[in-house]
Image (cartoon, rainbow, N blue to C red):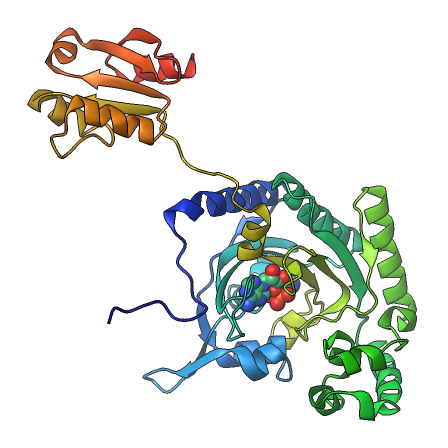
Length: 406
Ligand code: HAM
């Protein structure tokens, strides 16, 4: 029996990679415009990093991590997300000391042991960006503006932006108490998970999809109504900047993120087009995270998008690469001249069959290289769409000039 890939782990085939490259290039361009530089962090980290940042009582840490003991006896984990690793690197290399504000982006595979379905995989890919060192609401708005520009440049009208504020250590405890009191009165209607989480992570009840919980939490107190004055001003300022920058958004007071490090502004870019996997990108502020991981008190905010979900939204738009030029070779001298330049025939095929390949590849131009052309130092460059031919010198500049000149 032949060996297949692991469930939830996908191959990206050549027919799809053009689309992914388009997504990655568009992100790189948009990130560069806003001053972000790339960081590449390892795919495997010490398990403790994720427990301490994402939170021990989250679904990710409780149920979804690929954790193993390596041959040296250390507990290691395939990263389920990128923020924790980027903050670990920021602290380890003291990047915060080199520059007061750091803007970093990353792309790559993440791993979560979830039940695979359309838009949800066990190995998936994120493109993410993080800003550290700035707590001004202007930065929150700029990150959101950048995300919405990115989707615009990808050519997507979907997804739409929802925002919320999760407050800070000053105001969240009182809110938590109010919510726990509210839930305590509705204990009987909550699912087992939500009952269990009341002592550890009661906010998750707001996010629970079980019908009983959805109903029981109608009218539950919302964090935005319990913000302290500082968080309230901050959130109002973020919204003001979004309005002035004409970034459309809506307020979702029930939004709970599945990671514990968030404070203040949180957001999701949601779509109705991907079934139950509605979040295409998500993120927020995490002002205590760097300190929690042993670094200085450096605030941060960021987001990550799911590349598979973006690719699904872009659908089967064609991102095929077509060659500008196809060289057909005739005779040994031409073959040895041709193979140095670019892809040429290596199977001794007839000119006719080489030209069929030029058609199949949708090459824009072709040129036949034989003894006559080599002797003359020039050849006939053919424009494939209409067969128009022109004589060009057999030098790269001559051919390139003719091609770009049309
Ligand atoms: P997250 O909401 O867990 O946030 O994931 C961000 C995005 O990754 C989701 O909106 C979704 O598009 C994609 N994603 C997550 N899980 C899967 C999966 N199993 N299959 C396919 N796509 C998936 C974070 O990871 C945070 N680190 C985001 C962040 C950055 N917050 C601040 N900075």
